[in-house]
Length: 146
Image (tube, rainbow, N blue to C red; front, side):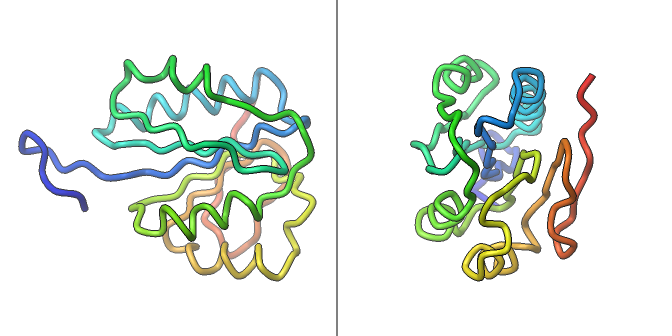
């Protein structure tokens, strides 16, 4: 837990948003909507958009920052999660929670380094999927897109 702020405990939630070419506009809107919901829970949210690259983190401290998120989402390429996981490991390893939004159509999902990093942080990861099943050792949830 972070230090108290106005007698409310703030936590840092790291959110990895898959912005690859296989993610449609409806999925991306749903992911952003979920980030907005996390912000309501008195959390600082750091979003890392990723496709085959991990893009610059976007720090959100209040619901007013959601426009900053929408403007900062980049991507559209292939899907490799290793660069995002390396960023987690090098810069955000102390985050209280890690949320991954993806369709889990991830090219490097079976890579040894990817599996090692996912297992390293598995106790703090919530994996949300719109399509394929995340690795079985992760706590995962299906998101329905209408």
